[in-house]
Length: 434
Image (cartoon, rainbow, N blue to C red):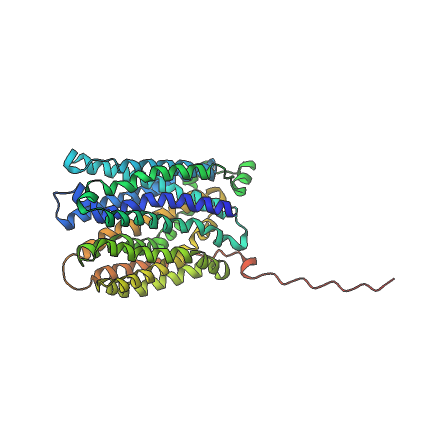
């Protein structure tokens, strides 16, 4: 289990590095380089629009790779998705700017971002099922949480590289070539990830399905016909997690640097410190999910997200780094209370024959609802005015309440014998000697 968890974590971290480095670049530099004819706010919105395309393509990737995972096995998904995401990310670093090739530059950017999202849409289902279907029942949430640490590690790598580049290079150098370095580095990381995953075994549950001839012939059709309500509920339930994370990691970065005048290195440091703590605490919250239930943790995280949105916005608007960090940390702890257990929760909601498709489609549809729209909506409602952007807090609160309602309609999946251990058998009475 340790080797499987490590391989899933590293591979997921690499793919999310690819995905996050684009979001950071969109907040810091892509607007003026690829949309120079726009105003600063419109340029940021356009850059976030290309950022959103990656979320729109993620459900398509989950359908494509989910079919492979349910028909051919979880293991092939891990190779194909990593190869696609890594190749698209390297290519982003090679795209000429608007100044060189005109409108073809943002068009190429858009196409490559679409391919990034397509690969990432398949990654999550494969990595999570590889650990969840190998894990012992009483510790399934714990072992399945390791791929959920991958996004935090990928974010820290992406932003750490960006932080070092912005601190070590002048503004002109960074805008000229420095922002491209993390995209080029993705090729080396992808090669390392492919090597690490080469020795992984297929999951016992899929092998059992294949041996018994019980694989789904058309997984998506079965999911749409038999599990459409479950897919919509899980997408709505998880939307708040995406909304919170990308408010902190993407919109707040742009807002702090452009509107509040906080140096980008300071904003990146605040975000990275909060994400590091969130990632480190992920296994702890997963253990709580194994003890008290997946749905219980998700409801608690949703409620905490709704309660913390206004304080987070107020702390951000102070432009004081310690208070910004505190606001980010509170939001991310609420986020990980939910997302530490969803890697076990979602697969348990679906039957094994359509699990790769169903769980991944629900998870990635939530990304469209919460991740794709949030930076755009937040940028739009925070434009103008000198006070705190309360519209952003109101938007996040509404998303949190909708997600809370969706979680309330989902069942608990904690196995009964884990939640209520069977009593120890009474000792047999001693026999009388003959």
